[in-house]
Amino acid sequence: MRSLRRACSDTGCKLVLLYLAPDMGTRPQHKPKYKKLCRTLLKLRIDAGLSQRALGETIGIHYTMVFKIEHGERRIDPVEFAQWCRGCGADPSEIIKKVGL
Image 1 (cartoon, rainbow, N blue to C red):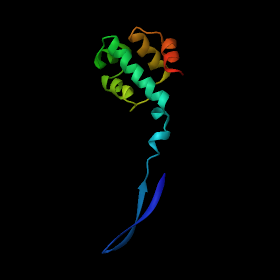
Image 2 (image 1 turned 45 degrees about the vertical axis):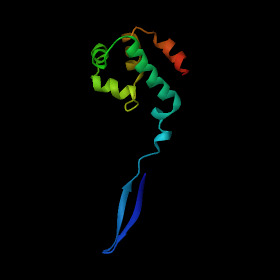
Image 3 (image 1 turned 90 degrees about the vertical axis):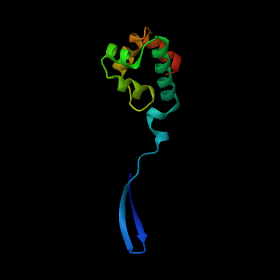
Image 4 (image 1 turned 135 degrees about the vertical axis):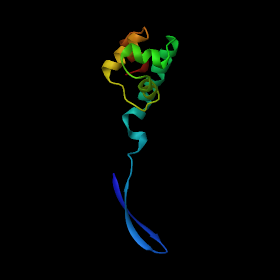
């Protein structure tokens, strides 16, 4: 969303165009079930005894993407989700049930 604001100082006024980010609480990756999914994926990896780097190599993504997915900074697509679960030795359908999706 864009917004025009008037910025005034002792030297005069000027119009300032601001870009306002959408409310983070309404973005899908920040809804409670998505947060639960991220926590579940993190726990799944840790319980499997895998580092972020090891899991990333197993499923073909960079380890920084593993971090970003676990912390809700990047969305995970369905194929990556299935690979993640299988890479950790879990059944994707069981994880979906566990999260309540």
